[in-house]
Length: 250
Ligand code: HEC
Image (tube, rainbow, N blue to C red; front, side, top):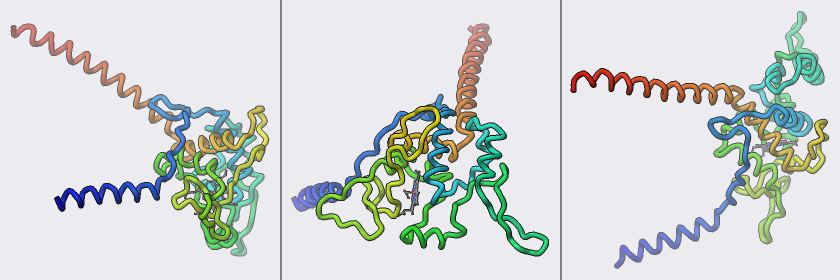
């Protein structure tokens, strides 16, 4: 009896606990890059890069991406040179041992705009905006999570007080973070005529970040399909050979 009571108690307690912590389920977006035949759409990657550059780059770097890698997004060499040249990076030391600033070159990587972590924390309420190169891989169900985070800002429910410099978000663990909602409708203007709603920009920037996290994803998946077909073919061949060889034994 005691054991049954304890058991019932544990089940009740755990369901109450579970209730307190329920995070809403992540929205499931149909990404073009999902599934074994997934591909990145070049126009979406370009829009996503635009959102990154015009909004997120104010606080976040993508240090695993060099400007010249943007060729995979369909940018021409001249466009890449121009994109790089619009940014400054520090270089050096020069002949006198001094560091200096110069326009970025295609070989340079896209760094955080802050000179160091302390400078970044100082203007972000003590929180460090992480480098976004691998964020889609670093979080569970990363693409859906980052999309949910960007679109998940809401008024805090009654009785919940939000800390100073913190913002309420349905999907961030603990529901409060130091990043204010970075997107608002029309924050960028797309040259291909796509309407820049918050949800559209969130999808586009997530596609760009998914590419940044695994630029070789398409090749990997294509190779997977080829290997699979090869194995099917070889299985058929070996089966036919086996039947032939054993037919003589009968
Ligand atoms: C004004 C600065 C600022 C801008 C602009 C900004 N962020 Fe952030 N971001 C932050 C800070 C600060 C944090 C850390 C928040 C924390 O840990 O409380 C953060 C955290 C994040 C995280 C990590 C969340 C987690 O699970 O740890 C992601 C993902 C992110 N930002 C994506 C973006 C994207 C995408 C954009 C552009 C659409 C963007 N951010 C624009 C400041 C910014």
